Image (cartoon, helix red, strand yellow):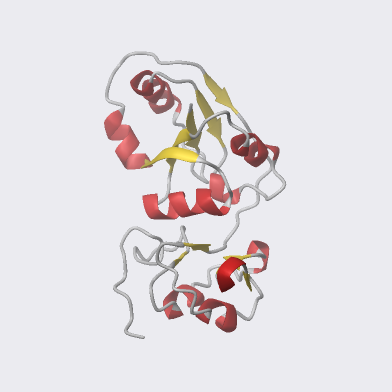
Length: 186
């Protein structure tokens, strides 16, 4: 199964979706922008209950997209950035079936944590005045109140000593997950 997350501005990916279904020999779900789906969205529940991990096309940096899927507890087999998938889909053959799903969306702004880079220093928990973070298993931070995040604020990503905090829609390539920041000396 191929899951295609439409960009926030809903660019039409119908032709790309059909070519990708042929490339992967799979049917596809074309969903609204994954980052903006509310926590109670039936689409998220459907993705969590897929019979096997799917391939995802998400218009975010791959690092941001994989950590977003982890945060949303959605299993995945592979994740492609939009530009990568468009290059993969250069065939002209019609593919499988594409099912379009919709949901009521409100643009959202919240961080995702790259758990492979998080050193559990809890700087984000101590720094954030909006109460976005809490302490979870093994005293590791997690995003417990994403809707409390102040729109456009990337301050916690800037103070994270290991560059583990990602704001997928921020214009800075390091904070949005396209590039890795070198860890600070602790």
